[in-house]
Image (cartoon, rainbow, N blue to C red; front, side):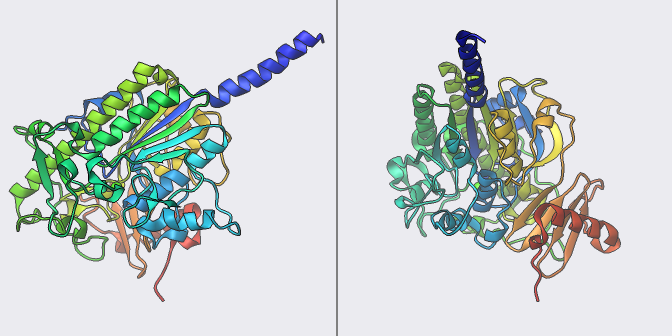
Length: 479
Ligand SMILES: [Ca+2]
């Protein structure tokens, strides 16, 4: 072989390895507390043209389940590909607890998804609420750079706080720098302002700036942008509320408080806001008004998604960037007499997931396969030709990206010491006390009628499935 042929061969091997391994970027768009309240997910009264357009060009998952029904542990699972059983009591502190292990040289902790991409040659950047604290820092105001929520994960983790002064202030902020205090906790607001009247306008703007910078870099990028709305309080520029002025919003299905042992709760997070003596569980007009504000917040988030996708197009990065958009969990808008998340009902656990890959076929067909948040990590590794780590709990979604009709698998979730599994037909919830809920989704009653007592064999089978996925530690029983 002549030296030219050898040189060409070496160039081919290295050149193709590089172009295959590292020519696709990843953009994650995380939307806080977004249930599938989107036009293209069946809520036809919602104005969500930008997310719907992404869905039409990618693969939407109508039955994506998060692995925990609150911000911190759900993001933990998505960002690490692990169920986080060891931090099950920590809730929103779970990533900080994991970070203590990462920082301890005597403890071995598997890398997170952004860390994995960073170790494999990617520039990793987060903007806004990606891990639990916007910007990923601890301390009283969530701005202490000595306390990182995800050590080694990000080249930069940014939270523009603008007039809200700190990430904590922005997280619960109302318009124009108004920060939540015990006396100042309005739950809804629509102001005559522009998109930057609320923190997400600033987060999105910083996201666009980062895309401009990252496309000029010599490495592929893994960029995660986390928008805060529709998280409480439901505050928006008035033009988004006006979209729903004359729109009829349907009332909640099955609004009754469940009977027997369930994960129902008193909507504490929600009830702590200033409701002027009104309670949507009793007051139907107030309930519908709140649903309009939630819808307005979704449309406000959708506007920013449009700007971000437009920036990808303007820079040409849309041709080699995978986009993943998801909600970190669902939200009860009155179903089962709950306003909020934190339950193990469908409304808390189901969130929209869309995956767009520039090279994918069969775009725009929705998948109704059951999938879970931990699946995204191995999927992104495969799509970018990175090595797939053997420590993630997820299953690659590539077969479903190729064929929307491909089947999924079961989805599990934990809420502190309570564990649940969703199969095609059933949901089982196992309480620490030993009590069990079993719901059949093939019946009209669905999650209103607990049939556990009459179906012991199904209960046994589903418990085995949980152990198969999560191990015996999935169950914590009282003595
Ligand atoms: Ca959330």
